[in-house]
Length: 131
Image (cartoon, rainbow, N blue to C red; front, side, top):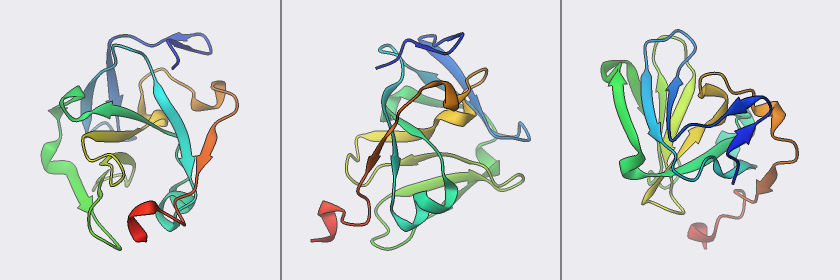
């Protein structure tokens, strides 16, 4: 759990945007940034994002719902969302914890994800739901 990342204070209500600004989400982060991680599944390896988790009711779309594009693959359980204009992955409904969204830490306004330090990598190649 991180309440501060580098010089940035993580607020309880924090703004998340795509690169072009078409998508704007409000995240409720009462405990700060929880479970920051990378994943080595085929999708995550390619997008390279550091993600953290928030409960489903912890994300509110402020602007750009029509700009969000859904992508699903493999079991079609997880729901990955990205901006159809700039292509930036913003968040996804998690397969391993469907009561949570994973969100792209690099999209949090004013946060540099490289200030976190060591980030654990989850084994998404051998996902327990694939057995």
